[in-house]
Image 1 (cartoon, rainbow, N blue to C red):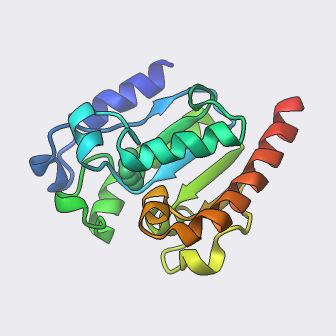
Image 2: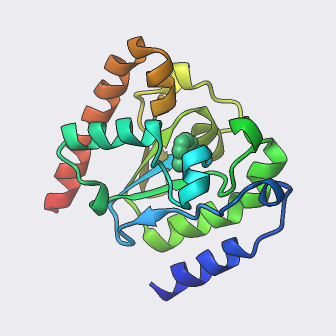
Length: 186
Ligand code: URA
């Protein structure tokens, strides 16, 4: 899609915050430009920064497995992040950095028009649901943003650090899967 391509070009040239100065690559996001389901993470990690693609490191491998278990292929969804450049040492992006990158995420959502967004972790949930939400409190609960249903869940990296989170995260993904396949039939 031309608009998404133009937006990517804009992101590749972006200097709105300091993250770009430290990052090797801008990780714009990738996937089906007409996806019903969009997944939003926090920001690129080391491997993503090397490859210029979202969720291609250890957390990405786990995400691929979760999608596969849900019967959803990575090619049919769109995957992006709140910030498009890797924060140094994978620190959480600041509110200023999130705000600086905001228009890219908002425009991606406007252009792709997903019906479901999964927020992977607190940063995505705070960006798309509310700045003060706690992921432990709101995960697994549907939220609405206009026509879009939003499901916050744990970040796959959190599941790698704490495997007891895997079961609740899988329950959240089952809710996503059920709605996704219901919407796909429409
Ligand atoms: N973690 C994220 O939040 N996003 C990625 O793309 C990779 C790891």
